Amino acid sequence: MTEVNPHNIGYSKVLVLNATFAPINICSWRRAVTLLYKDKATLVEESGKLLNNKYSMPFVIRLVNYVSIPYNNVVLTRKNIYLRDNHTCQYCGKSGNLTIDHVIPKSRGGNDTWENIVTCCVRCNNRKGDKSLEEIGLSLRKRPYRPPSTLYLHMTRLSTIPRCWNDYFFKQVKES
Image 1 (cartoon, helix red, strand yellow):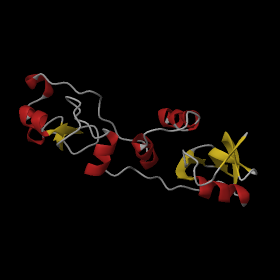
Image 2: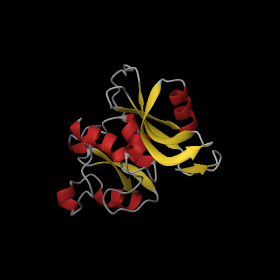
Image 3: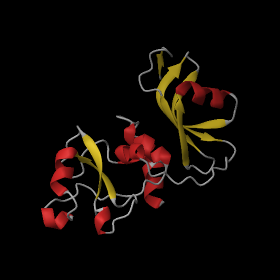
Image 4: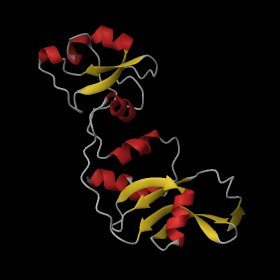
């Protein structure tokens, strides 16, 4: 293992798993090392680098004791819709000058639901108006969906994540 300067680590986020291996949080490497030192968590995945020639730099830790997490539905907000759709128009793929669009227009019975609202650029929104996708000849780049958790939304915001997170996080999302 190679030693690293704690102030110049590079990737500084750690995935926190519950005692059941379900992902529950993303924390800083400092918080993760503190949990490990206090024996409140165990190391699951490490980076292969040492901190101060003593501690392994964690990528994934698991809490020793189970923490009850109340069921959290992701709230339907503009911010969360933009996060889910990665700040891109769901019709043309552009990322500037965005608004919100109802796939099935409200004037035609469309509801305010995760499955009916997408981010859309002003140009595509004006082109679509209150018509259906079939009438105007538009198609969705990906089908709108309800995110499984707020942690999932935060994961989609991160530009890079350690590859080992996929085994713990995305497998859990698909099973939900």
